[in-house]
Image (cartoon, rainbow, N blue to C red; front, side, top):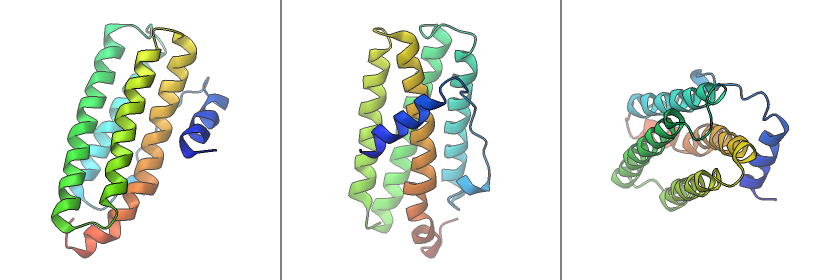
Length: 153
């Protein structure tokens, strides 16, 4: 089973909870600009989850937050990738692929919302929560020491 499938299955077990992510030092990659961006993305995700409790999945506010998150994710990905290119980060290709996978999967899930709203909404929120948690805590942490060794803070 691939990671994406596992993350979605794990979330489906707790889809009713939809608990927001809590920012803590464990999310810090040691680079202020990236930490600020990660915090903003987590806050957008939490807003999305919060308003989904009281709004239809097709509401304009949910669409707006989701669009803001995906647009800001692109800004964040470009920031990370530029740093990786500048400092010749060895796993840049894999990291860029993860970013592209996120964009494609998010768009696919969003398009599916019109077909089976409640079930797909849970899958979408679960995917976003699990993807950002895994991406920051696993994949982004892989560059933490590399960039700190290069003098970035």
